[in-house]
Length: 168
Image (tube, rainbow, N blue to C red; front, side):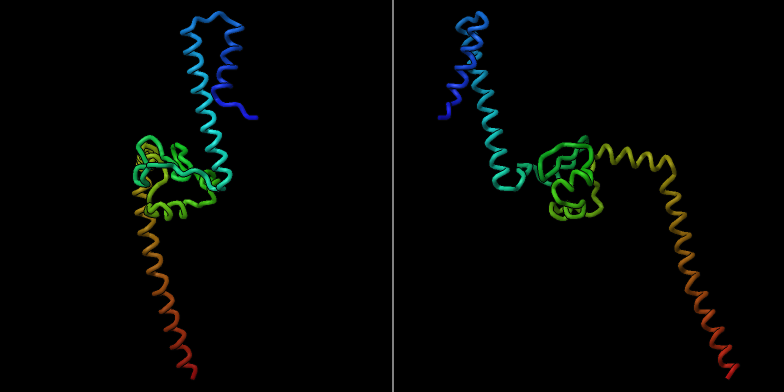
């Protein structure tokens, strides 16, 4: 036979009273506090049991995807965990990749799954190291290299054609 929360709370308070002297007001306050604590624990236990029974984790309720990325933290829309950045390891625990997570909740693929303060700090550090200028130089060199390679190939083809015509 299972006991009710009130019975459990009263048994706990009776044990407290037998060990220490308490006034009637202290007993009442202690009974209320113990009952509330037991009730909260029961509610958590019931939600975990429901979560295990359904096989699906409880979703972060009441948070819009655009509100989940904040200045100081990111809230996982799958479980409600708060962190500085949604890591690959965390997303794997939900059987998701970053791409799948972004697609599921409507983020653009360029959206960082990190707190805005962390993103800004990384941007400042990259600018301090000269990454934007170096990137522009690299892109220009790459464009020139790619543009020159096909022209050389065409010139080689023309030479081969002329050699063949002379041989014939």
